Amino acid sequence: MLIRFLDSTVFKTDVFKIGVSLAIITVVYAVISYLIYRGGKFLKYAVYLISLALIPVIMLMVSVPEYTDYFMWTVGPLTLIYLFYEMSKVTAAERNKLWAALIFIIFSIIFWGIYEQSGGSLSIFAAKNLNKDLLGLDPNGVNNSGGAFFIIFLAPLLGLLWIWMSKKKIEPNTIIKFGLGFIFLGLGFYALFATRLFADLQGITSLNFFTIALLIITLGELCLSPIGLSIMTKLSTKNLQGMMMGMWFLASAYGQYVAGIIGAGLADAKEGSTNYDALITYTEGYKQLGLYAVIAGVVLILISPWVKKLMQEVR
Image 1 (cartoon, rainbow, N blue to C red):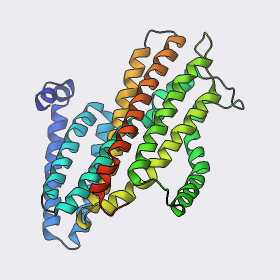
Image 2 (tube, helix red, strand yellow; image 1 turned 180 degrees about the vertical axis):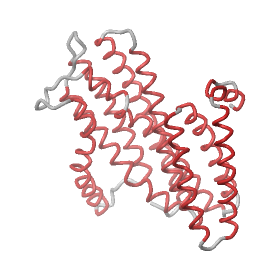
Image 3 (cartoon, rainbow, N blue to C red; image 1 turned 90 degrees about the horizontal axis):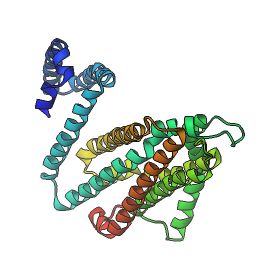
């Protein structure tokens, strides 16, 4: 990776800026290290300084996507190495819980990688391949706000359902809920695939059916998303709770990153084709994503007894 970076256009054209940036980062790192070494109230100042120092780094990664690639390929492995180091210092029972948490984190990357097409390929699909047969609403408006509307509408109902099932002692455990989230996600993408059945020769299909797909996908999110931070806290040791919650959010970032790669692949396949061909390309891609989601859900349900043993008393 380092050789690839040194040979990249970004490095060759911006070598002076990179050198200055590295010098500034080194100075900031030295100051932060000193504040951490002093401890006490100085730790608070170190956190402030780290937060401010990260702002230009994030801006740089946004402006130069190639930097984002290097960051994503670096921070994840380093985080895992540190987690494995910390796992070596805890008891066997605590280590098993951390392994269970890691399983949730890994599967959440897959979930968000598929789910977050709404901000990428689905936006293009909505703009170019959907009609306005849902009360004359703008398709992209539905794509952008439909999920939020369904969350507000469905979250209380689903919460009441879990409470009722808990009273009847039939509520599924956390890992089953994760699996159900994937299955609903997969069914939603199969519904997106089915929009091709309503398409005309110009490649325009039904917004109504697209909205039904969003409803099913949102059900999947509601099965998975609300329990993420809670389960991270329950499965972590006291001194690793902050890190595990951070890893949960990092998994979301990796999911967004994967979603961008998937969306870019679908968009590349669309170049030079008619609108109808684009519809077929997109919906075929959504069928594949639906299949992967369903497989992941089935795998989670099948391994749920083993994961429950790792989780021990945590439910």
